[in-house]
Length: 361
Image 1: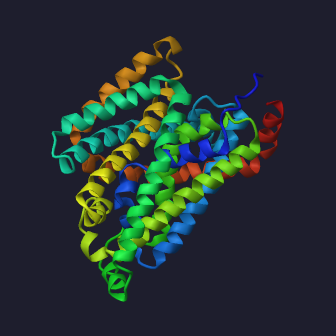
Image 2: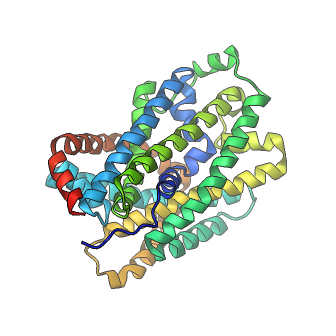
């Protein structure tokens, strides 16, 4: 078997892991509001649980992908969930990747309308072209692009979050406001499970083949640990920022941009650009994952598959960002529980096979 490339280090894995997940919902603060801040103090336990799940299942996906020398996520899904259930989960993930790509393109249009006061067409067209040209360059292009975006994204999110916390420290009144909020799930445990689930369903598309490109197993461990830690830190910062300004942002679509606007109009514009970059990182991951699934199509037609997928997603994006996210994400999150169960089964009951495959690599 060919020697694995050595250019993939733990930091690149971590950055790609983070970049795959921090799309429009994360960076805007809306996901954190719905899944964590809405549950008040219990949201902290939810963040801890979600972070642990990101690490555990992220590492499992990377490791199984490495053991199988996976070229797409479908190999990991079929290995962990079997032929028939795996086929159902494969279909769910494939549809979700396409739908999430359309949602990201639509989200870019919404940013251009709300923040730059330009036509949504400019945002959707720009996002579609950027995603297309990045994915055409292959996995290396995707990883390099996301690795450049993530540091700036995390710095911006932490800066806005810290400002929001110091501007308005959390009070008992803020906690009381959360009692009247309706979260994305019945309680903080289900919310954390669902949040980790739908995000990992997105991430598996790039984590599985990325695991196959790592030279050492320890690289995967540190990559998963740093990636999950970075995600947890980002969610925690946004959680406190949103909670400390909960009376003002509870009914706002993009809480973080509102908080940024309190600093200055320039900071607001800068954060809008950062939010666009966050959407880009997730859109690229979704497009790459969807195209990599099309293994039944000859590689010589890969460019045309990328172009065709982007055009189709652009067309679907006209439905609108909020409509796509409202119905798509929660349903896939619950469906992702089946994938979680399969990963756990494969990890504990197929361990000998996985180990033997690793030795061959």
